[in-house]
Length: 407
Ligand SMILES: [Zn+2]
Image (spheres, protein in one colour):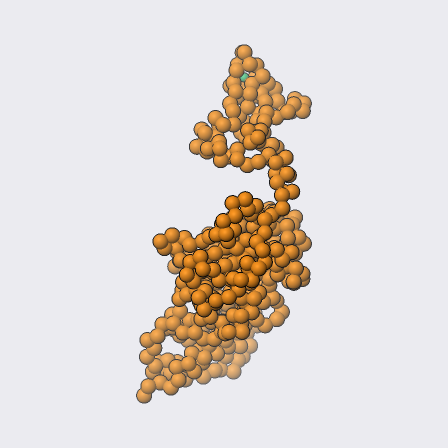
C-alpha cells in the first residue's frame, strides 16, 4: 500500500510533462508526485518516455537513499485514502473510573508536593481539580497528567516524575515518562492525543486560550493568569492541525519555550484559518543568556516573581503586563517619595544567610540576596512612582518575614 504514496504524475496535458534531466528532450519526462500533497518529489525524480533512446528512470526510493533518508521512513506515511479510513476509527478511551481512582494520595505525589511550596492549600486544591491531576504508583511519587478531550472523554494520561524540591523533571537515570494506556498494557490502543486541559474549553467558551509546552507550566500559569484557559501541547512538536480543531474561532496566544519561538510562530501562521493565533515573545525578550542556557520556561518566571499584580482585571496578555521589569508611564508626574532609606538600612543591618524564601501563595524567591539588591535598586531609581510600588511592598514583605534586626 505504502508504495503507492509516490506515483508518476498522471497526464493532464503538456504542462504535466517536463524536460528530461538526462537527454534534455522537452515534454518527455514524467515526474513522481507525492499523493498526499500532490507535490513533485524533485525535478530529477521521474521517468523519461523515450524508453529505448534514453531510458532514464529515477525512482523515489533511489532519490531518498541518495539524500540519506530511509525510504521506509518516508513511505510509512499513509496515502490519502488510508488516512480517510483512519479518521473514521474512533480514538480509544480510558474509563473515567481509572482517572477518579488516581485522584488520591497527594502526599505521595512529588509534583503536587512541589506545588504546595508555591500555593496555599485552597489554591492548590483548585488547581488539582481544574486539571484532574492524578497520582500514580508506577514510580514512587509519580504524577498523572490526564488528557481529557473537549467532550470530557479521557484519551490517555502521561505519567511523569518530578522532584518535590525543585519541581524539575527527573531525567536520571533516564527520562521518566510513561503513557497510562501503555502502563495498562493495551496493545491495540488507538491513541489520539488531545491538549492537556482541553476539557476546560467547553466550560469557558469565551475565554482566550493560552498554549504552553509543558503540563507543569499550564497548571502554574492557570493560577497566575486565571483569565486565560491554559492548555499544554505536551512538547514543542505537540501542535498540529488535527489537535487544533477544537480551537475553532477562538483567540489563542502561544507561549513557546525558549528555542521554539520560530517553530511556533510558523505554526501560528499555518493554522490561521482555524483560530486567531498570536505568538508571545515574552520569553524571547525577557530571558538572559544564563536563563537561555538553563532552558527557562514561563513557569520559572512565574515561580520567581510575585503574581498579585497579574490577577487584577481587565485580562491583558502577560507579555504586556509588568513582570520582572516595569515600564514607566509615559507622562512623568511628581510623586510623593517613599522612605527607601529606612528599608535599605534594615537590610544592611540584617545578615541574611538564607537563600530561598516563600513569600506568599504565588511567589518563591530563589536567591534572596539578589532579590533584595535588585529590588532596592529599582525602588531607589523609581522612588515614589506607583508603578513600582509592588517592588517596595515585596521588600516590606521580606522584612516582615525576618522581623527585627539583631542589634
Ligand atoms: Zn530522456
